Amino acid sequence: MTSVPRVVLVTRATDYELLLARHGTREQARFFLETRGQSLDEVAARHQLLGEALQQVSQAVPVKWRRSRIDRADLSRFVFEPSDLVVAIGQDGLVANVAKYLTEQPVIGLNPDPARYEGLLVRHAPQHAAELLAATAAGRSEVQERTMVEARLDDGQRLLALNEVFVGHTTHQSARYRISWAGREERHSSSGLIVSTGTGASGWTRSIHDQRHLELALPAPCDRRLAFFVREPFPSPSTGSSVDNGLIMERQALEVVSEMNDAGTLFGDGIEDDRIAFAWGMRAKIAIASERLRLVAA
Image (cartoon, rainbow, N blue to C red; front, side):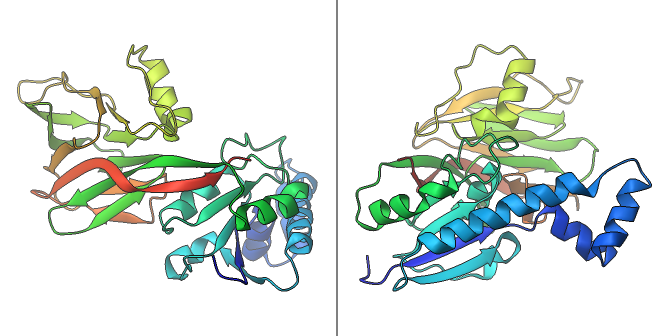
C-alpha cells in the first residue's frame, strides 16, 4: 500500500440520468412518463439517494488521499493501480461489473438504497465509509475472497466473471453445441447453459436450480466450486439431455464446442455487450479462475 492511497469510486448512470439523456430536459422526461401514467418523482428520488451517498463518501476520503470516479461504462478503459481502494456505490451488480478488471484490490460495496437493492455485495451503508476506508487502508478489514469463473477459448480469448458465464445464442433461437463433462460427451440443442460461482448462486442460478427442483447443493460464495446448468435441453434423435447439471471442482473444466455459425456467444454477469463470439468449431473450457474478488465484509 502506498503512503497516499487512491480511492476509486465506481458508479453507473441512474435511471434519472438516462431519462434526461434520452429526452433532453427534466420536464420533457416528466411529460413522457406522465402521459403513460408514470411519475418522474420516484426516479428522481432514487437519483438523489445516490447523490447523497456520493457526498458522504467524498467527505469520508481524507484530504491527502487521491481519488478518482469512474462510470461502469468506462471500466474497460480505466487503469487500476495495485494499491487502489475500490468503492462501488449502487446495486449489487456493480461489484460484479468491476470485479473482472481488478487484481487483488479490495472492494467496498456501499448501498445507497436498501429498500431497492438487496445488498448481498453492497452490504455497507454510505455513512460507514470513513471507518471502512481507514480499516481497509490499514489492512484491518475482514475481507472475503470470492471465487470467480473463467472461460478460455481455443483462440486465446478469455472471459472472466464473478456471478456466471453464459454460453448460447445471441437471439432466442436454440443454441447448438457439444458438451463434455466427467468423461461424457453429448450434442445439445438448448436455451444455452450457465456456469455459476457461489456468488451467482443467489440470482439467476438459484432460479434455475429451484425451478427444476434439483438436489444438487449450490456452492457458497467463497467455495472453490462452480455449478453448471443447461437451460431446457431438447432430446431428439441427434441431441440429448442427460448432461445437464453438475459441480466443477479445482483442476476440472467443462468443455463446450460450438455448432453455431455467426450467432454463438459467451458473456459474463449479464453484460451482453461485453461478449465473445463463439462460432462453429470453437472450443471453450470453463473452470475456476485463479483471480478472486476481495470483498470487504467488515
